[in-house]
Length: 454
Image 1 (tube, rainbow, N blue to C red):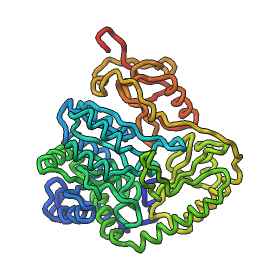
Image 2: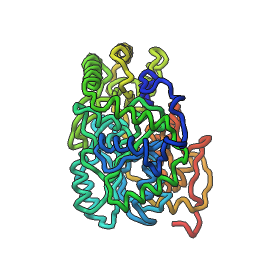
Image 3: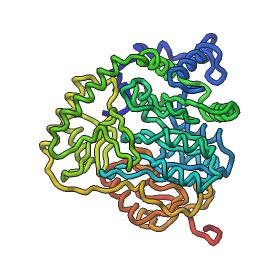
Image 4: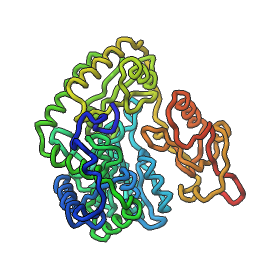
């Protein structure tokens, strides 16, 4: 129940990938100066997704995010950033010396990160007329979708470029029965991680642009600098096959969505666990939920998501995509057959029966808590640092990103103050076996305090 979307090759678009593993020779074209088969392929992408220009990414969505930020901004530009963005966004803030204003996602009644409230966007843009772009994530890792149409209209009003990290929504344009993709609103930039929810190998992604000509050229120039000069034809051929085989194939998607619907109906029988489906709450900034994300809420049981996921793996041989103190997350793709989803549903029902009931309030994500910012991220990068234990890091200024993975969203960014609450949460993650990037052997880099700092 985790990415990549081909699920170990259970859904193959191309039988023999070795046959398409070629390089730039006669008649295979050049990605950054395409005139032949790649130009034709990317024209199909643009036509299918409804973008002005689409181009292949073979270094994941990260390179698309970095290219957009580098191509649209100059050093010290102001940028509006949704605080639940992927850690690659914060790397871009440091690389290009950008000055962020943060906007925070709403928190759902379940304690999960919700969507972005358009009214909060309006307030931020009105209060900061120097902002050049707004970068946000929709759908979230959990599949919550924000009102991109309203947010795009606000960005247009304030002459701000909207960048949507739709890494987890590459499948949305493939069926009218799925929630609307951000591309329908024609933001300046949309980035897709095709490998997450479609049957393509890891790293395959897309960059879609609806930009003025000079902006587009600038983004593509940065992309050519950052991305490999030897792009994977395996990735590009698979992404092309997605459009040609899976695009305009409503019957396949209809059957797939019926299988998901049947799964969700069966999960309503659970007494202790709760499957969160078809979730909409405007107050939480959520206008739709992606049915490909299977959210199993652990609140109401004595077990948290980590414990439940471990039992699911050890007893039923099912690996989830993400687990934490609040829930488990599974990713459903076309590679999951009707039989596979039935087995998944049966396993959850059995797990539910063996779980003891308890009114457990759970926790709230640390991402919702606004940190004290002492330095801009790029300013923190230039400071002298010292390595300290987690206990010693309380009230210190971080020199690194601290990122639980998954979901890959930093809870602290360089230049921000590390609180006691955050340390307590990090220690709980580590005890549960979660990977926390930025913590090495129980230690963290903080900024060395001198009279010249702060």
